[in-house]
Length: 442
Image (tube, rainbow, N blue to C red):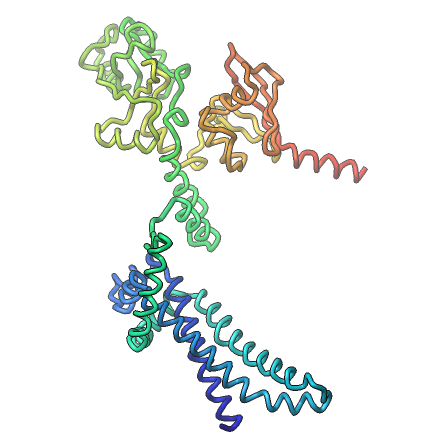
């Protein structure tokens, strides 16, 4: 054959190999979620791609048969077509015993480079740009190619299956979607501008409901406002005026003797009707939902939904009340910074770019968000920043006690009856850099 004929055949082989490479990456990389959306919209080709992904052995066998056959044939034709011309070129400069070898090396390098560039690299990079769109476009011709290679592909797959069974290799594809997968998609959506900042924030917090326990969002025991059966009318009126809560626990004598709860609305109705508040009775006291402190926030939501309640008492393993939680508390956890209370009630107050004043009862998850810390050490052993300090110090903290962790200094500022009230958190790394820069300027 002439040089022109050889070049035409090699170009046809490159196009064929490029098509197979393009198809292989597109079908492997096409995401099932997008393909299902296309299939549900009526695109039959998308359903064919999904079916091929479920039974991909025949396709990959046919693809490898085609790619290897084309590569071998291209090498044979290319070497025979170009070597004489390279030989004539080489002998102009070198006529030694290595002239034939050099001409072979040059022809081999040329053909191999053409196949790598146009039949492998470029098609695969193109396929990665829009795998679903390309997979849908090539599915019909590739099915014809699979039928042509079916006999040889069946034999190759049979041998491969025997070897997989021999070495006990599981070839079943797992398509389970994990939280990490969804988180990665959300991050990509946020970076692309598809998700707004607040939407990304809300979705992250919703998934955290499965990981956060009740103590991270409840009102703690020392902050629970409750009535006793012998509560005076003046005291009830004062608490209603002083605390903006919609529900109050009713206890026999102390907080651990819970009887039920009263709705502030019921009490206000009695006040408006000029009825006495001297005795809380069955008409105003309601049964209260009791939950253990080991539940996750997601499980609490399920309890609220099944019982039609929005308020619950949290008890520990010793049947002692450790706090109360409402549906609003969980919603605030989801909404996060977008429903931050007024400044006086904030648990985390940012003083400047490198320091924060933090309440000791602040949940550890909120600390991680505020300080942008991925993981706290052994965080299964505590729920709050105060618990973190006690765990790290291995003692009851005192003012000025501090812990260094992940470039931050956690320092106890105020302690009230062994309870950590406030901490000062300082970013050490950046602070030191600022000081070094200041000294250098001086």
